Image (tube, rainbow, N blue to C red):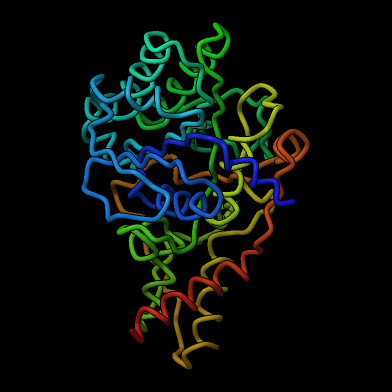
Length: 325
């Protein structure tokens, strides 16, 4: 029996259903559940086993309906950009923290206790190069407005869970890559996606500095399975989990792999060009990050299945199919 068959009798809501990870998650959920409420600020195309709700989750109006119609809420909506948060902290506050506040209040008003799976980020840890691999006991030290708001949202969920109002789980996502069914797919989400898309267009790849900083790239299908397992698991531990591979690779190594695999696929030589860091580069970019994933593996039974080479290969195949359509 597939463990995800247990989703059959669950009412599910997905905020940010039209987004990069949200669209991939909805697509996977439709194989198991016929009760999926997709929430987005834009009109969504009809999809089997789903119902759509056009709503602005920054306001309280929609949350009682969402909470009442869901046993599990996958909360992926909100600001996804460090730079956007720096440029407009008020909007970041409204899109990141207000929805959690409204969700918790709605749960109290409706008298429901949903499982809430929150898409957080590994960058809440701050600068971690001296402490890698990083486990969940490492004290987060946000150095950006974006990460500060994300961390506060995590703490809101943790407090509400402690008070017995919801069951909250925060997934701290590393560098997610891979194609998605969303409008914002491989072309414009995540640096590895952008680099692969450029290389498939025959363009050379720009590499900031020496490209020696370590990253932990995790494929989107593995991320989706982490969300689904978090929604189902009877054990939630401390409610915070790293979602990553636990393997380090330098940015240069990752970009070189993209260039080599694209060259093997297309016959076009792709060059890496070292360029200076832009003046407005955020300090969070100057870090090494590799996660310890023992907690999520032991508690939720989650393990990443897609290697970096296999994941890049899938992106190249997808981009090639799109080009040939």
